[in-house]
Amino acid sequence: MIIFKQAAALQKHLQILINTNRSIGFVPTMGALHQGHLSLIERSKSMSDVTVCSIFINPTQFNNAADFEKYPVTLSEDIYLLEKNLCDILFVPPVSEIYPAGLNATRHYNLERVENILEGEFRPGHFQGVCQVIERLLNIVQPAKLFLGQKDFQQQLVIKHLVKELQLPVSVVSVPTLREPSGLAMSSRNMRLNTLEKDQAAAIYKMLVYLKNNFAGGNFTALEDYASRFLLHHGFDKVDYVKIVNAETLQAATRWDGIDHLVAVVAAFIGEVRLIDNMVITRV
Ligand code: AMP
Image 1 (tube, rainbow, N blue to C red):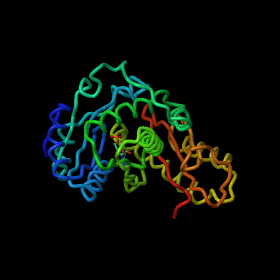
Image 2 (cartoon, rainbow, N blue to C red):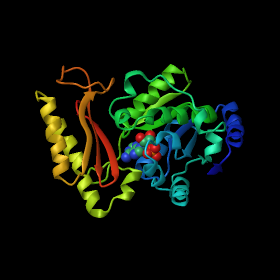
Image 3 (cartoon, helix red, strand yellow):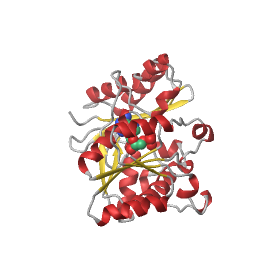
Image 4 (tube, rainbow, N blue to C red):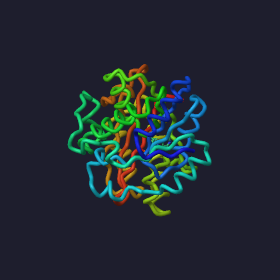
């Protein structure tokens, strides 16, 4: 695996590959890699000639300074895992390579209704930061395919919206969420949980499965209230939201029309660690 820190050097290398008709698959991450990230690498390898992974903890997408500071950094383990999984190229830029004009010189994106709901409501400015980093990374890497996890359901929709809005020549591939045997969605943030907390965190999955099994014909507000109480009862300290929403628009749903796909989305804290998860409940 070749490791680049400078955008210009990476671009020069990739241009040679693109000129010889090699397709580039791109997996952007913030590091602290786990099997979920590696499933994206694997998918990219199966659909592209060359796979580029980036590790960059993007300061502009953190609305909470403590969350940014505590974000796990495990670069040497990450490099080991990427090598083992035959990733071709790793891009690990310093902040100055991504934001050469400084953090305050970033642009604003029109994200319409997906911006200020759910994650956007609880993390103001978060999706602006996500768009800033993704646009910059896509400009540098110029991939044919961009691989994103369904684990970050809203982020995936926001990035699809961005790609469409800016008419970027890249297709977005969604990869299913990889889970621990307990059902807990793999996440870099799980590293901050102790063994008991990890067991408790699996309640999210149980709750999502409950919603999936009970949504049809149910009163969504009552189900969401029950789900929230279920999490608090099983060791969660605070629930930001549990919602059943339209899987395309993320607008709240009150009942199922039997046609549109619905997704149950959740964000909740165990101690200071905020976990998010989701499940498309209308699919078998
Ligand atoms: P992150 O490093 O958290 O920014 O995640 C980088 C990419 O990995 C994003 O597209 C995430 O959605 C994806 N990802 C994170 N966790 C998982 C998981 N458990 N299964 C599949 N993809 C994941």
